[in-house]
Image (cartoon, rainbow over all chains, first blue to last red; front, side, top):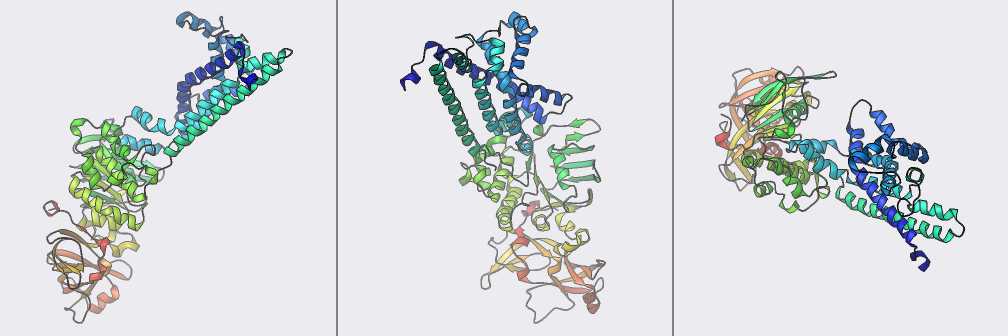
Length: 234
Length: 371
């Protein structure tokens, strides 16, 4: 097993960076993900179809296209990128934050879909009942709706994390492949396959990638089952 | 306590146009499915916005479409118990019970947790999850949850409709205790005559979105003409009686009423306890002279007060027994054979065994029985 655990510093960096990027991408897309899922599931407003399409766009577009669009808008000279850099000091281009942004965008449709399904399965009668017991709409959301859609939130978060762990096309297009800064696991594997004698490294990272993804999946199953048991329909 | 309702609402081909006031301890909204009962209490609870109307509870206006008033449901403090208990599946029974408490201003909390839990007999369930409860247990928890929010009015929307007969029998006594001990006015929606006759102090009868009759239960139950054809014989007199004594030899209880003594199967109640007795019109026979050699034990003398043909083979006869009206449903053929006329002295005959637990109930405590 030594050949698997004896990683070079660059390989370790790639593993650590991938986990960091995926975690940040997942955590930051949760609040907007819940909000947009709520809008799509419950809202009735002009432009709902457009919003739905926009959210799903990264799922249909080639990742390279998404990455390039990100480069155009969030790059140093892009309108959003320039604005954020100037006012908040947030820089995306060629930074790990950019990788996180790309991963968040790519995983967003998956997250929104999972959460939206769980919102649609929440019994609105229970919310009305909470209202008759004196809970204001905000309390109803926090004490009834949110706990009842928890399985969907967990599923959405794990999907987003898993997608981020595997994201390659948009990331490499937007923030390139800089070891230690933007070289995530997939990029590192790609780099290994491009050099002679890189097979062992590629295989190691591939195995690590498989292990992390499986662990995330199992964790989500266990969590979902535990929550599901608590939510057995009354 | 008073509830004033005046609502107009049109939905497709259905028009709800109902108006009534009630100050009863337990007001039943009674009528067939689709008569608009549930819509009415949904408006009171704030779950439905009427196109036109005004709703006031205890003088506080909750809805007034003319003035653009519609108090949101969470600010009304009106409790609601639904047909399906609607317990929160992610909370324990105790969590469900305590839910409404958080939202009631401390000064207005009158419901005490232990009192309510004991009143409804749900202490053994507190740690359980709603999913593991029986239908009857769920409904008791739902009632407790609504009560513990300390509402000013409790609405119950067919709370027993989805339960089987034995579960209903399990819950009915708790609703009686609620009516008599919790001191909170109740509006109770039902399409089951037996429940209404047993529980209600007042009845508002609805049909096709309109109020067709309203008044004290004993009066409304005598309006056999208002009942659906198949249930006409189920209506009849509702008598407020007291336990006069027990006949231990034959396992019977003797009830005292102005109409005379009535013998019923043994009730487990002390002498002096109020008992509400429903005498179904179809269980009453009429004799023109005091019968002899008859097995029936209850023979109440009286006079024919009115005879109303039902348009078919039957006649509804109202007998005034010392100021108490007893109704009998007989055939037109019998009426002619006995030559019954208004004012005639007759005897109303009721078998003891025609009384079962479904038509005998804890009566309203006497001082508060409607005057």
